[in-house]
Image (cartoon, rainbow, N blue to C red):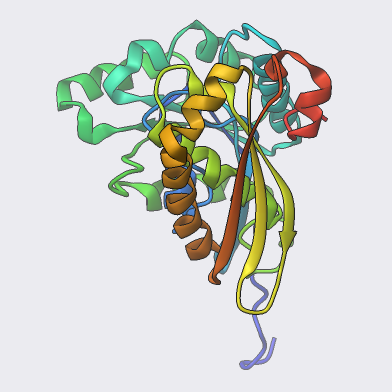
Length: 302
């Protein structure tokens, strides 16, 4: 080989399913790995309903992350659809990234997660998140217990919020993905449409501003999305299950809906990098969480 000959770069690529119980930090991790917010994040559990696709590309790695809903025992049709999405993500993935919460290990590494890990027929990594919320003794106990279920070389302790040990996690991911060409252009961050992320940002604001059961009873549908000179026009409908919920979302004199709209618009404009006119409406779709037709319409069921 001549002195000036190029040495071929070995690249790895594949799909990585991020799995774990609700509220262990899956969406926060995806956003941290990408360096940009794609998945909505709230303090409430079960915020993620549909898988979010985020693509991390380096010189030698392209990891297509699938941020999944939290593993749970489904109680109604929407949750059954969420579990089905998790199963599809596992089937489509080359690598399974299980997450547990160091600050609530007993809950996050319960029977549901242990069974999922033991049944895994693909390469897997366990990421122990929120190490900034646990002392060293607790982390040592967690490490010993995980050692009974996972090879020590595929366990990593991280803080998705602070960014601790994320480079170590990326190395593990690259080691466990197959050799192959990149599947998407290097500048692509996601393959999901702008409509999807716009609806998610509105739903995030409903979660932030309303309490108790209301956020879990809403769905957001983008009814119209027009790119125009000056400002894009976006018409979005917030669906609730009861008339009483509609009044709460709108608020006295429309005050709550205005708050949701104003903060949603700011997030959408920052994401799209252009001004938008956001036209929000609230409608009732009775018991939509129990109906397959509504779940398909809102993108939760294929």
